[in-house]
View 1: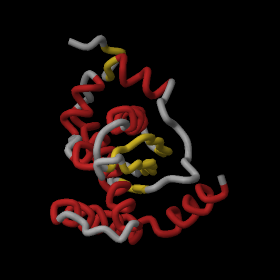
View 2: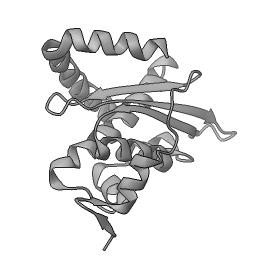
View 3: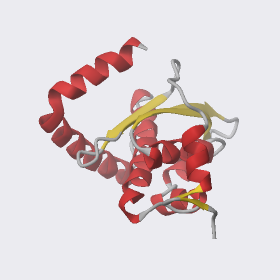
Length: 172
């Protein structure tokens, strides 16, 4: 069992205090932005992708910016570590359970943070493929559409706040 610090595993606290791969990536090949209406967490996840000689695309770098709680920041940090070196197909298979397990667990009411991190990575991959004019796999397209529905709800509820946040984010 993972060592705990209150409701969080020590690895979660470590990622929160010392986030890996934190910061905006100016030359990203793909950017994913997701948020959660219920808790207000917002994540930006950036990826750098390289096509290998055999044509397979691999994530060579990943970073994030997250406005959220301990679990949101830790999940963002962990997924960037997990994604590096993976092919796009491998990265798309990273799910909430894998993130939670890698962190040593999350309280049940914070599992949604790992879902956001997984969705942010999927959106960054979607963005990369769309920028490249590539055909989007059906499962990724459906996932993107689900995420977009959530984003629209968030914009309806928090439109002014989101506009202010976007301005502040883009000024960095």
